[in-house]
Image 1 (cartoon, rainbow, N blue to C red):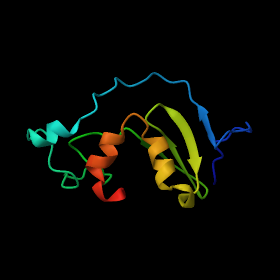
Image 2 (cartoon, one colour):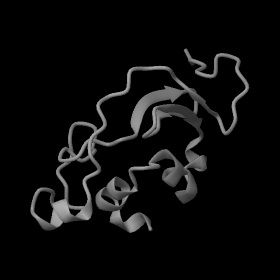
Image 3 (spheres, rainbow, N blue to C red):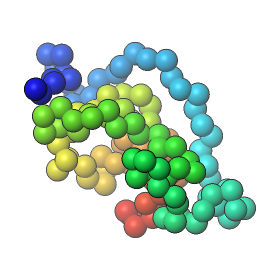
Amino acid sequence: MTRDFSHGRSQRNNAFAIRRRRRPRQDNAPAHLARDGALPPPGQWTPNDLGLPSEWPCPVQPLGMGGEYLCLLDSRGYFHRLLPSELTREKLEELFIGELDYLAWAYPNIR
């Protein structure tokens, strides 16, 4: 069974705001934390059960699949429904807005 997460609403860029209690915002872990040894070097983190870095939680939350669409919450709490082919560099930057340090630390080869 396929779930439709759009709820019949017209969506700009397949995104709409979900009202939810915001999780406490973690401070961006700037590069100096890696230099000070608080974080492993970029790209050399320990994966958790989802394959994501365990040292610094990912600000983008995957929710699952809706048919062939990826459903996730971006770093600001907005819902996105995307085809895998839509995950361009620009879209990743949009999803991680305000958390680009995380993206550069976790995946240094994306640039």
